Structure formats: C-alpha cells, structure tokens
Length: 109
Image 1 (cartoon, rainbow, N blue to C red):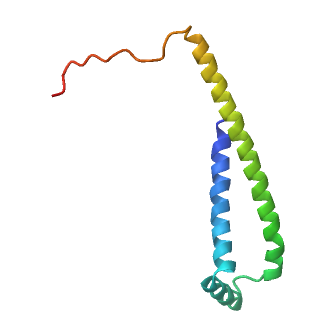
Image 2 (image 1 turned 90 degrees about the vertical axis):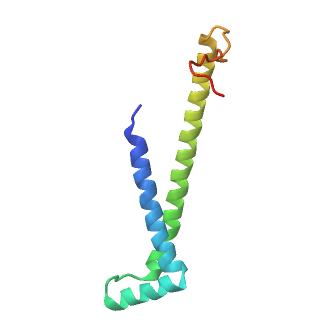
C-alpha cells in the first residue's frame, strides 16, 4: 500500500480549494470584480474574462472526475475494512468480543 497517495490527494484538494475560492471571489462577488478591475488597470493580470470563462467548465469537469475517483477509492477501502472485520470475526473462533469486567485497584466513590 502506497502511503504517499493520501498526501498528494490532500495537496491537490487544498490547492483546488484555494484556486476555487480565489476564482469565486474574483468573478462571483462585486468586491472581487472591483479588485479584478483594479488589477487589470495596473497591468498585474493581462487576461480576458472570456478565456477564464472557457477554462472554468474544464476545471469543474476535472474536479468531478477527481471526486468520482475519490468516491471509488473510499468504497474500495470500506470493502477492505469490511472483509478484514469478517476475517477477524472468523479468527476469534466464536469467542465473544465483549470485554471481561475490569477490576479496579482504586474504587470510585
């Protein structure tokens, strides 16, 4: 099992949240549109909103694909855990999983 997959997923997820949040702020709010206008006037951003509007559906599609892959991976992991629980239950040879009463050295009052 490769333990590095989770870290990369989280890195991408956080980066996606940041980029998405910035995009929503700049294109979805009045204050963001004002900031974008000032940045354009200053020459910081030299792009057209039409090009960005063409890119956003592709980003949404890619995010949905990643979401589907994540859902499948979660389902696979849940199945593995369920199989492990079944094997663990069989290995117990019918012994109950209840714990024996705990004997306390100091008794509570």
